[in-house]
Length: 411
Ligand SMILES: C[S@@+](CC[C@H](N)C(=O)[O-])C[C@H]1O[C@@H](n2cnc3c(N)ncnc32)[C@H](O)[C@@H]1O
Image: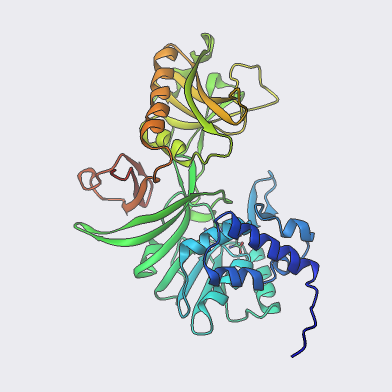
């Protein structure tokens, strides 16, 4: 044995740096996943990307956009891949279905299942599957099966798998995914609920009235949207009929959207709540608290070119908001004097601005008192025909193929 020290090349150095970062920030804890992420050359699956972009821990590499600039395909950020692999708990010998191909994640999965396991990856876009097939073959993963199809349908000749890992943003749970999952198997999916996306790890639970899915964990994430027969777009309500203020609803518009027409004719009511958070604090449960408690929950975007200052959100592209009859409100923030915290405020517009701002502020104060720092809501997925009385929950969201419920864990 020689003790010659071989200097790692730049790509290996950057890859190890990414993995070190993921271990340090808590996204990566399993030694098996760590070893695989150190081994598989990420940059080789994004061949035209500069090394520093390929090895950015927290950024995806976009590989396809449509004519309007909407992102259609990407190789996900290392942070997202590590987080979802941890959620999926893939073991040697398992059969895994990956929905949304890129090549890289399928290579990780192939390493994790080993020679006695099996990985099938399916993508709706033949350009993506052609590239994935070529890259997988080039880098020694010829045993991964690559299929071009809408994954809303069962994959031909697949049989049952131990894990279904969805890597496109889903609004609904396709019945094909659960049908292909063995009893006790795991479904990991970036699921959009009331406009908020969480990567959720689900297991199937045998309930009194039939099986349903129950979440083990849910982590904030962003993803390119699902295409094909289960694609679902948010609906946009333009306040006052102009694109200046757009309210986005994930599950249908309010019953009478015209009631908001006069909301911007009265002065804006502004309220500071006294609810403060640390600058880096994760506020996923605050978002969920609003989505659960406010029936008219939505998100707001302002067109910067048309902005006349009717609303003044801190983030013009995405603010948490809600509507109640003829009034709407959105969250704002300001730095506190110590410059280490931000305080939440509420702006409300419409005839009931004062009362509605109070109501939204109460949701924030309730979050601070009861939910802050605590567990996320449990997410359950029931068949679409499940009656209300069989879904005890804090909020039920109706999809096409499923009913998704959100429940705060009891203390
Ligand atoms: C984020 S990319 C996948 C990333 C990939 N898993 C990786 O290795 O990083 C999402 C992919 O989902 C695909 N997709 C979207 N809707 C789909 C559908 N209904 N069926 C199959 N694939 C779909 C898109 O074409 C896109 O390539």
